[in-house]
Length: 111
Image 1 (cartoon, one colour):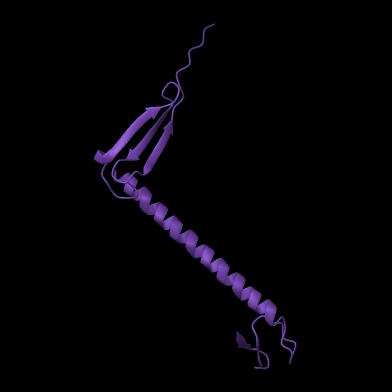
Image 2: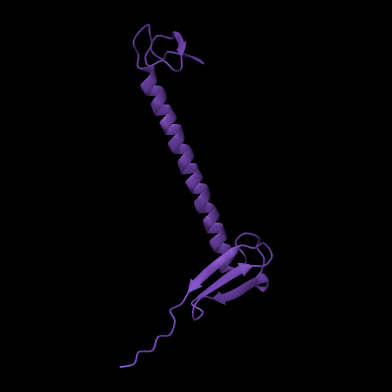
């Protein structure tokens, strides 16, 4: 791809490190623009992820499945492990694992 040198206006390759006419450092400028675009894309993706997490947390506060918004009537609770040490809560409508809770088993000590 051909671009114009910002210093002299000559048409040069976008992969050139510097302009052959005026030695302007094209590669450094293009590298900075690419890095800036990548940083912006990463920030946008993180913002979208955070917004989605906030939506899911709000749905949980309302008693709805975070994925399909099914009410708690569709939730299934299963207990398992040694001495029933964990509880798994799952939506039966979409299969989403909503929460997994762990509890410490009752331990009796004999002295």
